[in-house]
Length: 102
Image (cartoon, rainbow, N blue to C red; front, side):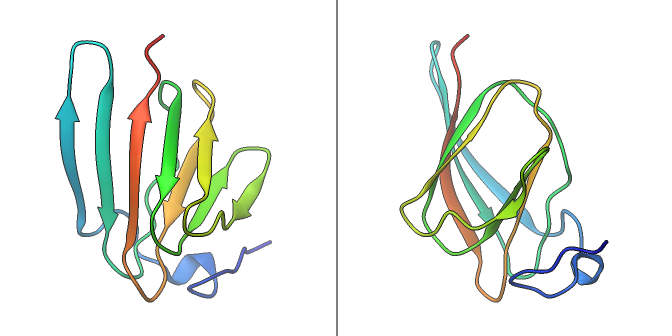
């Protein structure tokens, strides 16, 4: 089954094109800003624990949950090693995020 959302069928969205990361790091935590241009789908990856503060429209995918839209001001939490992805629609996707310190 093909999922749909902001951009229509998932197969019509290019993967990982024109994604810009602006990063800030300290010894205890890693803070970053994610900016993905219009109509971009990131790869399904896993990482240490992550928390995102959503600053623009966009869709988020998490293994076991599927695609969802948290909305501007919403938060997204990914437990360690859980596969996840994000994709933008007709506007860029912008989010602040940090890695867990564990």
